[in-house]
Structures are given as structure tokens and as C-alpha cells.
Amino acid sequence: GEQIMDKIIIPMSYMGSGSSAVTDLLREYDGINTKNSDFEYVFLHAPDGLFDLEYKLLYNNNSIRSDEAVKSFRKLMKKLYIYGGWGIANYKHKISKNFLNIVDSYLDSIITSKYRGIWYYYQKPSKIAWFIRVMRRVIFKKSTKLKQVQLEMSLVSPDDFYEKSKKFILAVINELSDKEKYVVLDQLLLPHNLNIIDSYKFEELFPVVISRDPRDVFIMNKYFWKPRNQEIPYPTDVKEFCQYYKMMRRNEKKTETLTLRLNFEDLVLHYEETKEKIENFIGIDSTHHKTKFKYFNPAISVNNLQVYNRDVKYKAEVEIIELELSEYLYNFKNEIVSNGDVF
Picture 1 (cartoon, rainbow, N blue to C red):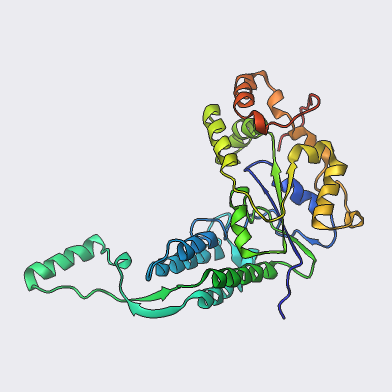
Picture 2: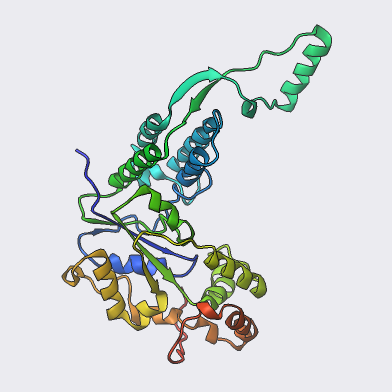
């Protein structure tokens, strides 16, 4: 039978702001499935992922457009299934060998008609085909018969789409999770697309949004992560960064899904009370916290705070961030002087 997930915990952050800290903390509990917690599942929000399919079918559809939507979605799912050297892929092992079957039965459930036909999307010839076509017309006065393709139409109602898509998401997550009551999926949703999930009516979702002082995010990305080739896609020009960061945060839509919002700094500096907030939010007793400090140790993570204070050469850039992004700064009560490893 179908095992329904009890609770899906989704730590998410604003790129480089510490969602993995929450994931690491939850690794220390029994009864929480974190075996794939350091892997980012992008099949919902990647280009041509499920949210793009939703948009195309429900907001930008016409009698034939859905054919492209279905085919693009299937193509991405096939790419995600195999590894092929792509870090976010390999669903064959990261989810299961059954993944593409789940995709196929999902698409079958939303496709409303299939027939062979032709539409402009497939009519653009290659240069060679075009040349041959012109020659046939000029020399033999013949027009070319256009190749028919299997068209897959999905003129599905919103209710139907959300119901079938929710089943699909749960089926995928069921492949991942054993029989634990909880499963942790890092970045399955992002703060800027969390509102989209409202329509899917998930009672099982527990999103935890972690934000972090942008001074540290900028300095760590530019001076620590980038040199180690671990960079995240932020601008390294400080003015560009401020503009981008501001727009990213303002662009976030309100969500009706109950969400826990935390500061990375609080998890380090006010460990016990922040940990308690997480336990209360997901509804787990602290007696389940079996291997405390094994994966997340605030005494070590404190090295990742106020990195922007470590070197006088950061001062000019930090002052610009303080001015431009004042509303997003963490209010440190005192100065932290640390020279441990930044990670």
C-alpha cells in the first residue's frame, strides 16, 4: 500500500546562508530520515521542472502548447535520472530505479489526449533539411510533406493538476524515505518559490527558512568559497551584490504554509532555545536528540560568524553592505573574534 509521509522537513536558505546547519542538527535525531539530506533536489523549481509545467499548463496554455510543456518536463526528468557528471542529477541512485516509472504514470494521469499531428514548434527545419526543401520546390515543383509527431495534450483543470502533482511529489518522496516519521529534504523548495506550494495543499510540509548576515555571506563567498571553487552565484562586486540581495529578498511572496524562520547566527549563539523552536515546530521530543554536537557543534560553527571582521581589507565593502542592507543585518550583541577554519 501507499505509505503517506508524516512530515517533510525542508530547510532552505538564501544561497550560502546555512540551511545545512539545520540539516546537520536534524541528523543527530533518531526517527528522522536524513540520508539524502546533503543532496539538493531541484525537480520542482529547476527550469522545465514541475513548477514550470504548472505555469505552462495552468497559466500559459492553449489547445496545443501543452505538448511542449509535457515533453520538456519529461526531458528534464530523464536528464536528472542519470548522473552524466551533473551534480544535481543521478536520481536513479538518489531516489530510485523506479523514478522514471513514477514520472510516466504521473504524465499519463494529466495528459488528456494523444494523437499524431504537426504544429509549428516542430516545423523549423535544420539548415540541410531547409536546403533540400527549397531544391525540391525549385527543381521538382514539389512541396515537402511535414513529419507528424505524437502530440501529447494536457488541458487539465487546476484542481486535477494539483491533486495529481501532489501525488507525484509524495510518490517520489516515498521512494526516498524508509518508515521514519520524518524526512529531511534540503532546498526542495526555496524561499522565493515557497508560495507556489500553497496551491498543492500539503499538510505534511514543514519549511524552515534560514537567513544569515549578508556581510558574512558576501565576504565568505568572495574571499573563502570562490578561491576554493565552492562559489555560489552572487555578484562579487559589492554594489551589485547589495542590489541583487535586496531584490532577491523583496521578491519573496507571502506564503500561507506555516513556516519557521530562523537566523543562522541564533542557532550558533542561542543554541538551546533555537533548537527548541525547531523541535516545537516539527513536533519532535528532545529525547530523540541522541548524538548532540556530532554534526552541528555551535562551538565550531562560531568560526563562521563575523568573518567580515577578520581582516581590515574587508572594511570598505562591509560598510557599503551595512548601509545598503541594514534591514537584513544580524544584531550581534558583541564582537566575535575568531580565527578558526571557515567552512
